[in-house]
Image (cartoon, rainbow, N blue to C red):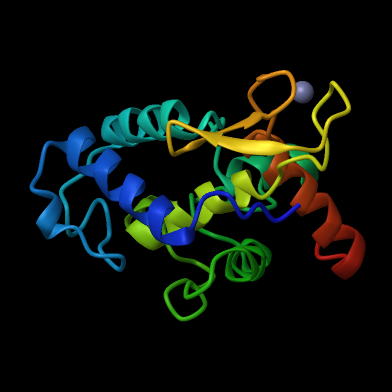
Length: 186
Ligand SMILES: [Zn+2]
């Protein structure tokens, strides 16, 4: 369900903080539209560090694999990336649905290595929000009284257990299955 304990603004602030600490840069340089790799100089390993910080902050599990990885796993090899390492038209359709603003930046035949550059501060924050929005209606103890602890952690007001969110990988997989059911892309 859509959670309303942590405001979007707060998520954005925490994402900026995780990036600033993860890449060791001045937070003032970080804008919502900044590309982590192109504008802020992040490298592949920095993403792991940033994700780890966000997981600790919010008690969530960020996706370990990309949408592309999940497409190939669910719908077969070369369904997202052809044998030359280029993006397929079907993968483009799916990515454009998944990420606002990707539509005019991706096209069939582009090199898959160009994709990580598209990750922006906003898209990362949206990813965190989508995980927080998997907050179950009730805690496993049956109580329906979520509350905030340490400003960014949602816990049960009755038993104090942390909320259990869907993991990033599970969320992508569920979403892809739904897309496939609705649109029969693959
Ligand atoms: Zn509980």
